[in-house]
View (cartoon, rainbow, N blue to C red):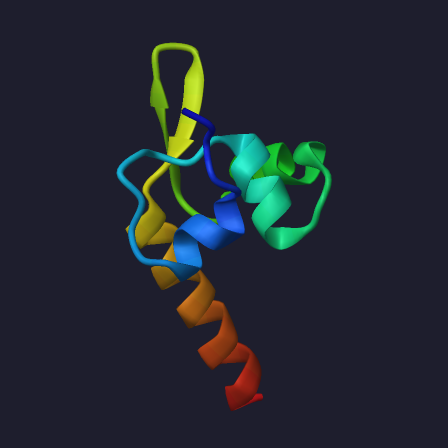
Length: 75
């Protein structure tokens, strides 16, 4: 079974899987290194570690995006 693209997954509702750094990079159209920099600086969507892997809860990514959009429109 093929994994749907991250953008389609989030727009369709909450996926039944956690997102990877590759998914986040695709979703925001940024290089994967940018996703890792966001994590190091704690400026991007909140992620968590499972062993040596970083994962993102789709609900947390949606909240982060909504907060960023609200902050941007408030300016």
